[in-house]
Image 1 (cartoon, rainbow, N blue to C red):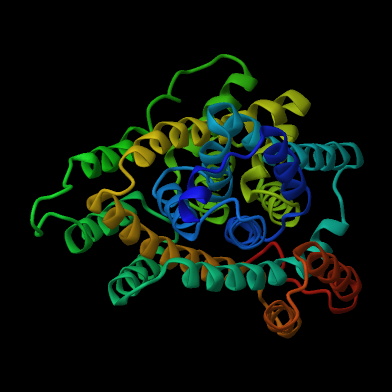
Image 2 (tube, rainbow, N blue to C red; image 1 turned 180 degrees about the horizontal axis):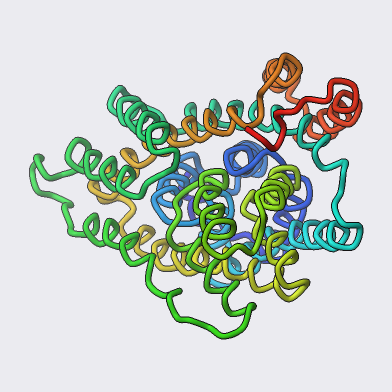
Length: 396
């Protein structure tokens, strides 16, 4: 039965239909989106095995770029081939692009959207709950032993210490996985050099993006191509890179505009790095939004389509499996670390703390849908913000 699942092909139109829906109703950031894909594709649709999902998460977390879209491209590739990957990936992005570009147009036209702060106040603690709930599901999916938990603890500590995800922690964890689970210290039977090939792929991610272009569109594309190529993991940890480039170095945005852009990425469905679309619109209108979106996501397509065929060819190799198990442990640790960093921004008083706790209880007890939870949290924010008037929102 498992062999049938592994070789199962899904029509491209079905992949497009699924990812259009996920891009429209999928809230909570990368971990929540990956958790939703795991729940629906492994548990409900039976499009994937647990092992295939775990492979996808570990490999994509070890590559630069946004996690959720890379896992979506990965799944689309192994079920729909090369063209399925392109179709499914862009279908995932399209609804979010339309929503955020529209919000950007409204923001520019009306000189700001006062209700954004109120919605952010209510939604952001619910996002924390979604991340924690999804991370719990991911630990059940792929955390098998004490070594993986030890690697997760190290990655968690490093993420908190440097306030960002770093490439070497995934590579180092993968190397430990090769040593512990692989064939290096075992009788030579199926050993191969594939693991070194896999380890080398992330190191080529930062090529390009330094060409000085004369137009603002060119500069936007180059900047976001760098962001998609050089920053690792979930959407929130790309924020320090974007803040330094957009506010400190280029001066394209002021601090408040940047925080509003991040809020738009958090509050809208789909991948959090759709923040790039909002930034692009503020800087250069619709075409700025378009080139920024292409720039931030294009490296994900190229990297996944380079790595996926290599991994599929050598997926039974002990060293490849060892790398995946080690990197998966690091992925769980960095996700939890990013959740703590986000929590410092999202939870600042008794109400936001209560929203986080109640959201967790609702998710674990009643398994309410993500859009419904986000909608309820948004209403709470709209009602409570004018009454409490918290001064810490968009300041912390």
